[in-house]
Amino acid sequence: MSSPAAKVKEVMSLVPARMDRLPWSRFHWLIVVGLGFSWILDGLEVQIVAANGFAKTLDMGAVEVGMAGTFYLLGQVCGALVFGRLTDKLGRKKLFLISLAVYLIGSAIAGLSFAPWFFYIWRFVAGAGIGGEYAAINSAIDEIIPSKYRGRVDIAINGTYWGGAALGAVASVFFLNTDIFAQDIGWRLSFFVGPVLGLLLIYMRRHIPESPRWQMTHGREEEAERNVSEIEDRIRKEGEEIPPVDESKAITVKEYGRVPFMVIAKVLFKQYPRRTFVGVTMMVTQSFLYNAIFFTYALVLENFYDTPPASAGTYFIVFAVGNLTGALVLGHFFDTWGRRRMLFGTYVMAGLILLVSAFLFNAGVLNATTQTIFWCASFFFASAGASAAYLTVSEIFPLELRSQVISYVFSIGQAVGAIAPTLYGSFIGDGTDRTPLFWGYVLGSAVMIFGGVICGIFGVSAAGKSLEDIADPLSLVSEEQEKAGKGKSKKAESPSATDG
Figure 1 (tube, rainbow, N blue to C red):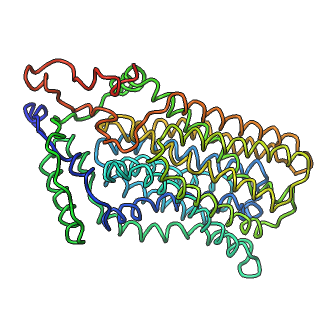
Figure 2 (cartoon, rainbow, N blue to C red):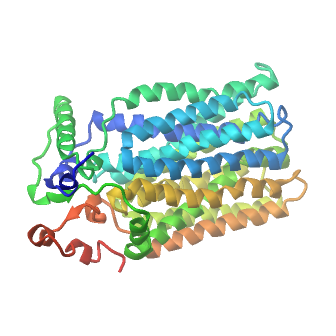
């Protein structure tokens, strides 16, 4: 047990400055692949369930299929809340290994389901693992990637969800083909694709270090400095030149320990109320839209356009690739044009395109191909905006509660978004009446446009800035505190540190 003196020990640290000045290297690619693969698994899971190959075996209708998506999303909410707090307490690395293991177990057992209730339980468990991944991994990525590249890298990594969705579509086309597999066997095998890939991912993650920034604020400054030195040596061995560190950027911190809920509430609702409002709005709007579309897209193609389940996956491959392209192409502009402009533009464009498609759908002039083209165009923008939602929430709050804030905002978004699959499943029905789904698409469009307007008005300009400049760590010791042992931080009195 640490002594009282150890708890208040103050250290001067260059860890943030050293990490932010690093050039791009193979080490950073390891972070991208090792951590970013989780979103591929999430996309894979969503797509395999959306293809609903299990529906006939488990005797599930449109509403029951939508409920499968809802249980998965509710699992994400619980997993994010539990693992998010543990991530801030125990470290990023431990939790992105534990949460991945939970996902592997849940997904594999779901493939053995014999009844809807059993399927729902293990979809919930798999979702809990992925929810924990969102909290732990977004924290680790933003704390390790240099500030110059943070925006595009975070968005690209979150955007790889669509790569997983494309992989899931390919798997669905293969495993749901009754000429290859029996109807009761193919969908079960598809649920083991993610766990097999996840086993390889666990091995890779063992070589990813703990976040030096997390170590810095948890009384492990020596470990943090040693960790950064090892990363620098690794990069130098790759032949990269590392510029000298600017020692004027040193900050003094002290171990903060566990963050009480009252402190979290104060930070969210008193110190940064606008940021909290923006974060919640972004998460709710993007979650509602893409959960509504992606957990039910196969039902739309099957019920309104008579598309066989196996063929529905074929349409989605192009759709998913287009969405992945959007995150990769547009991510660069979040670092150059700025967060607020790009968030406003991507959310509003996604909403407007969906609105146009809603009227064309209601008029009956679309077919399966043109419907997919409109979805693809809308989510070319929405995918970048949705990915940027996780980036924004991760970077605009203090380090010591970063993972927890991600989990809270993510959970609110998913809790609201969790109703979308069941709601839109009821709109679809048996495909005889287009009017309910038309109004559903109008609602989704309005939700996204609203989110874009809020981001444009209240968004935070964070491009290229150090995380510590965007939001003061709770463990930060100001010059006044160093000299007098009391007083407020200068940065805390400045407009950049609060919403006031």
